[in-house]
Image (cartoon, rainbow, N blue to C red; front, side, top):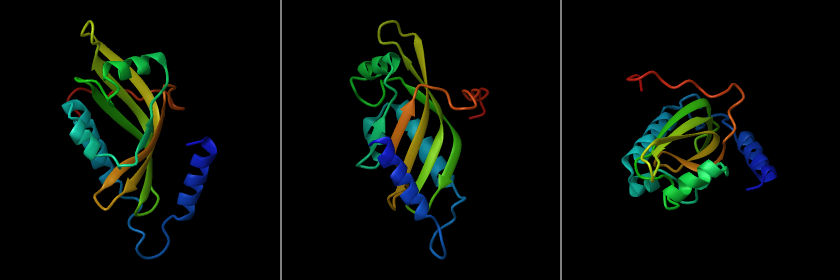
Length: 163
């Protein structure tokens, strides 16, 4: 999706924002928080079926195109993540636009074992995720990620045992 098309999508979603009855509580992001936690668990579980159940059938994800991200994709056999991977997602801004659409902006840290040495490899990204509520909860619909840090820099990792 081109930047212009993404901008038009965002503007059209904003124009359809909540107004009047039936718009839902646009400040309640608990369903998105839950979807994020389920996504982290599915990656850590290494179960492609669990991962697939969490995304919209028409999902498009664009990962960073740097060499280290391409190496991770190759290690995963072009699956979303290699076996043994974990992802720690730090949302920086989450907004529910209306009952059907929301977005989540933040950073993530993917960790996976090097297939040759077993050493832990860490990859960071900044993401913008558009979510769609299918009636079965919030599901990623479009995601674009960059290997560049967010404007305020990389978030500090959570202290051990606080997640």
